[in-house]
Length: 375
Image (cartoon, rainbow, N blue to C red; front, top):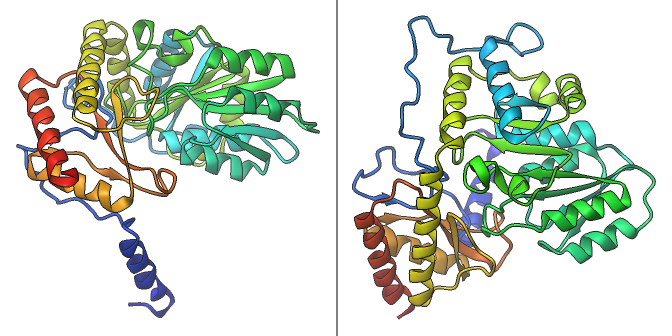
């Protein structure tokens, strides 16, 4: 081992002792194990939505500002804008890159940003890079947002939230947040990553379902759409600014044109896939009811395809995950720093392609695991 990195072994040992060390999964997973922890909500990840023609371009070859801009990119961006009722959209390589690029390009020193306590790490990092003054408010607390907006601020004001929180499976009151932003002259930025494809007419997400127009909307293809990459949608002046100033976009190779074409097919499919959304709702409600009946504690306000089973200590969450895997169901334990200390959980997710037999198998596995771990 190189001497300069020798301290890492001790740091990893400390993570192990605290029950917070992550280990790489097995290279070959048992195909008989039922996966209930992915974000493939509509079940598109295993579908071949396009047939790659001979000579199809896999690599963009450069940043889109140089030689990496291709017709497939604009076709997808126009489809996204039309789907979400926005003027324009801009593709990013990942949801992390989209949030970091958006926030670091828009916010600046002297600005005030009000951020939900459970916002994703990419939002937190984007705010840090912007050097704006951050006020972290309790989760989904509209009153706390208003109190923060009432405080004096020299620069611009921003409110940042997720549309559907990935670890709690609940949603904010965007109508109230939009009204506050309008009253106090703030901008509303919404990461609707886990809601797109799942909620609202044509799967347009929480913002559309609540009838709210955010100032910027972040979404990804790696959740319900089953692909990869992300985007920011909003006014054309916003995407023009990001084209010039979002460093995670400017200094990254463009998204694969072939991948952009596949993502376009997924968006078009999702817009008309009301049957999958209805099936997803039914599955989530049935499993949620079964888990509560068995004595599991789910977070209040939980809805949709994400079912967080709250355990508390890291060790308990790890034991329950292991007991489920022994019964042929894979659900990982979610531990700090992903969630606050003392709130370790199993983040159970359903997908629309889950069959009746598989659902019953999952319910029985949870019943047996509960008896084993909790008695």
